[in-house]
Image (cartoon, rainbow, N blue to C red; front, side, top):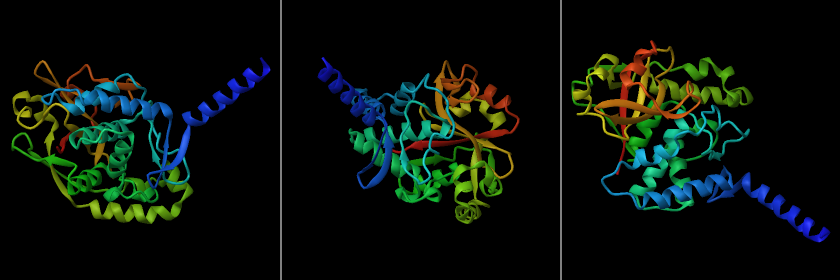
Length: 292
């Protein structure tokens, strides 16, 4: 009996180690749990059976509904690692996870290793994981780099509804370094972040202004189910305030997002136009489509 108890205790110790594994996998530092790998593998298996006409991004986004909103889930270690957390999400990690899964299906890659590879290519500049500055922190930078890599395309027409132009003036991270754990621990990174901000500043992108989001007939010409919606803002130093996915319901556009307000991943009950009106700093939306 005592021997059986010892073996059982050893089994649970080994399982605990597997459930919170940090490992060097596929040549990169990766952190994930057994639950993460099982969840991702199950989703990829399920998605292979989806009709080709279905929206793959929305299929995956829908599987995250109800999961809790938690900020800063990537800020776990002092050094930069490919952190996977499928049980707690913010708006950026929701978009990254769904985009990585979608790219796997589009390119017929169905393993957890394939997902890790896709996630790394999405999260880091040119897909190269180095230190904290190699992560794409501003979504405009993310869009431009991923478009160059062929993973997404930013929709810029027709006009209307893309009636406005966003001219970037970026400096939020370098001027609020104390708000970022990594910049507090590594002040030497601030100059690298500042250089990235300077490269972004002055760039222009067309977007759909808030008033035009009320016009469903025009929006349907530009926005498809499962498109990434990047909400533009007038907050000094920033480009994008929030991210989510486009969901058409009964002829109205809604936002599927990891919501700080609802504390979980939801499809907003109100329309996207109503949602934008409740946030005075939101100026409109940019539209990004995951490439097949």
